Length: 117
Image 1 (tube, helix red, strand yellow):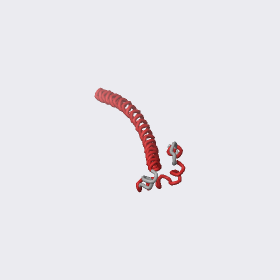
Image 2: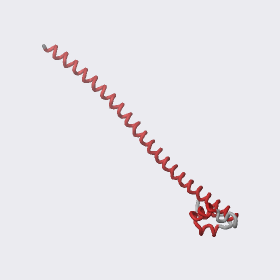
Image 3: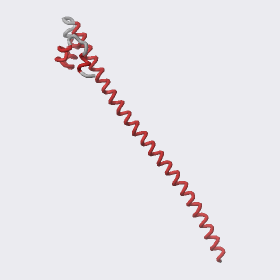
Image 4: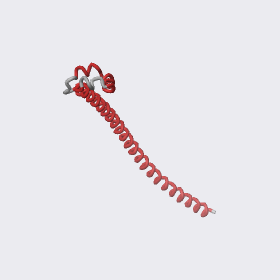
């Protein structure tokens, strides 16, 4: 929300802009305009509310963006882990075949050695 939006539609907008948000907070808390100019006091409260809502919205948007980025990173990590898992299973299968072939070769070598005696 821009400054224009924060002060939009307020009768005392130009005066309130000059005081700035910290000054407005101080005036609202002190009740400076509460009796002498209750309408200005009400508008000051509204400006502070709009400002706080705008800040909260900006913080929320940043948090949402961080969460979205974190989720994207987590998805990519899961994809990589899944590929690594698939590769590991493939390597394990080839290792089993290599063990079977080595066992068969050992049996054949033992049989040949026994036949030669």
